[in-house]
Length: 448
Image (cartoon, rainbow, N blue to C red; front, side, top):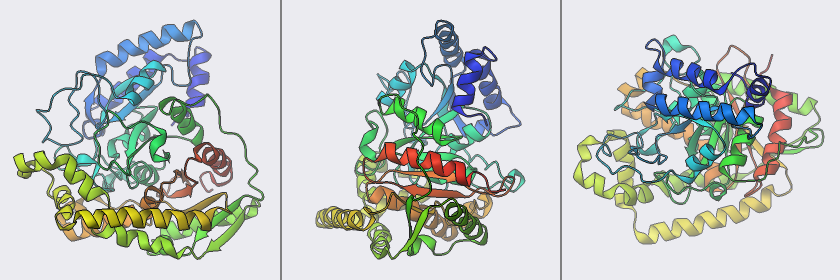
């Protein structure tokens, strides 16, 4: 995978063109021997090449951004004018086509990106594993013969990048749906503070928790995309001295049930950070234990998703993924008083967490407690699916509940199962987090 800065350099040196990059991505998407048919729900072959030709003309006259001419994929929940937004479901096949692009899509177009297609996802974004019984599930790039999960819900987003179908991808993150597939697939995935990037024109899962972010090859890639979709001033991550950086490691549920691979890589990553001079503090962050309990009965997602999909549930419940509908229907047992109480409890936990973590530059933990498991056993066993899904979401969902920004960085040994390190910043501390992550990335890299 080439980074966005490397691709920019190649374009500026006339070593390649947007048309060449885009054609190569489309060839990978349409390769019958690859994962393209399970990764994309729609490829934009004709429009992508037209956009690439326009981008090349912009590049010729020096009118460009960091994304001009770069092939980008978008998750199947973003409105594109003239297209139906299905959100990974067949229930919405007959929904009206969008009349305008979502603001995120419009900003990508204005920046000169070439949009190569809509990526597959868990139906309505309601799972951290990435399985989709309607359109198939793309396989993780690691140990592809075993066919492991890509992670979700931005499943196709991750595989579009790992398999050369896009230079970067745009996903959504409500409980980890950018960071989980990024971690499972060896990518960098950035979840901004929820209100940093507009969610208008994006099919929602949770009005409270949804955020929009990139999956890409590096922190610099994610920062470049974030600047465009968040409409922020152009600014590359500024180096932060890792020596003296105050990093908290919660001694709570986030370290429970780690598999041997994740535990070993996390320990090695901590050692490398310590040797680089980071000040690591193992912290009794006990209130984090309250978050899974708050989410167990559906949290914010079940009632909000039920409200969003209620008419569809009444019209064609049999057309839903049964595992998605069972989670949505947790809202049946939640009262209005329960929801109000949850809102109050969340704010109380946020306030207390802010007091605990404010003396640190970031909080770190494994992004996901295990390496990507095989698809087939999860498809065959509902109980295993439910248990694995809860475990996959556990650490990442903390960032959404606390209204924080967070990023996952690959920290595994090259050629081995991907493992991610999650770095969580403060609410609206997105640029500071990207600065920190860019510096940590240089220390941990892929462990040799």
